[in-house]
Image 1 (cartoon, rainbow, N blue to C red):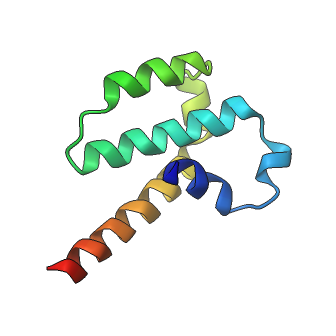
Image 2 (image 1 turned 120 degrees about the vertical axis):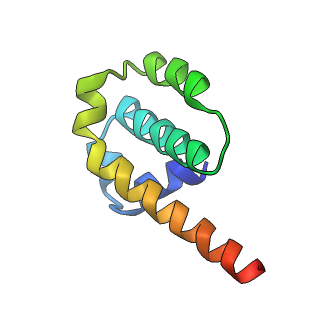
Length: 86
């Protein structure tokens, strides 16, 4: 849910200009990247979901910058939270 929110929050008009398949592909890819970064095996589940939304190499490459930005933002927030808690 956080990944989906982060993908859409950068551009409020994105929902209007981007299909549900692309939004779901990006959100799941972000969730996979974040999960793997924090030690949660998520590739196999993400792969199935990404394929469900017709995600392939070309689709992921087309969305790469948005996926990278969203994942970086979430990971930075996690890092900040962990640092404060320590």
